[in-house]
Length: 131
Image (cartoon, rainbow, N blue to C red):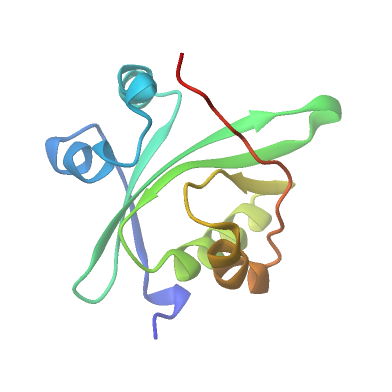
């Protein structure tokens, strides 16, 4: 079992190792925009490590009406997502962030089982048709 305090978050610049891990889970239509957002500093690439494992995480802040600040998790590649999100919640709350949001390609039942205990609930569903 991973304890949140065992996690090490390191901010990283764009690199081939992260690119390889993220490539298959980012929408190919958005890949160049996604990569540019990290390189230009609009999004932050994190390397998260624990005891013998590594995950990659991309986040950005969004300012909403009335000064409401949301931490957006754009993508997480790797393992230990529940522990990573628990630690993100702790850190974001300590910094005065109002909420955390993420989109996923995984089935709703799976995400509800993993993230429901952390207080996450489904807000929207996105459907896309290629033309």
